[in-house]
Image (tube, rainbow, N blue to C red; front, side):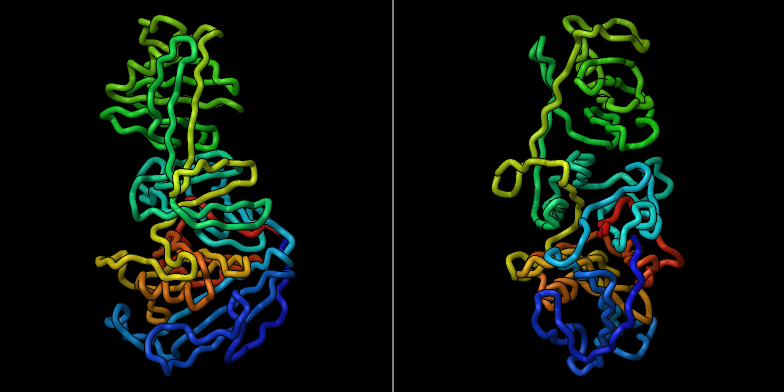
Length: 406
């Protein structure tokens, strides 16, 4: 249900999400004017718009000016007062992209921001596929990467809690009758031609990726219902598939047989007794196993901003570390949830470097915070309207969003 906004009150100083009086944002010159406008969207849910600096930046100084301006939007949710749930949504299917406006509207949610880094390139066949961790309703739909830059945001929707960290994943497929097993290295991501095994779920899209290799379709019990010497099939409800390319194609086909691999290169109906067991393990940075329950959601980010109240963003150079639009998610010491956007690449809001982004997160009282996808993806929607100004000429379709569903 969408709630109407109450009249906004302009204030020179306000409360940051942690509950104490806010200091000016640590951006640019210390004497810059700063205004804050706070709106109540629903019980326990507020939206604060911060404008720091008053004069448009010269177009040639967006990356270096100390006078701004900066436009920051901060959605604060108090789980103790708010009625609703924090979760994620990827839209109609995982492989496609949609705007944040469409993702929020389709769920009837009160507010949301863009979330994961995703394949992005529109010319690619599956542009919405996450490039790191993705969990929806307790189901792992995209595996975390080993890239040390990846940071993960895990949501307990039942308790409205967020945890920022780094998860790892491992999976195998085993034939209990023959005791043979193979590693699975991808989830809902087309395997490279050189040779890999990927698992696909119905959430991926209308059909699995087509191409050379082998594909084994399993029913909800894990029993083989189809073995094919090529890839690409529409999965029925409850079905999953395993795709293999290159040197892994023949071993996967053999694994799917009760005893002896089939010699036909055509699709066949496998014996009912041919069943496989897919086993996966998700662990945290301490090596402890993470249980994925129905209320578990997760998205990927790039770099932690704060951890246990300390700024932890690493030093770096290059375009990613330069000023850009940013999307932030984090929690305060008192358990409040904060989703924030910083507009950028414009004379009306110059954006932030990674160091500046971490400083903003710290100033907002975020004990633990993560940098989500930014740039042209940075978008916030609340109470049925676009809150920020995306850097492109229009909203960029994205892979998924973090939403507050009231």
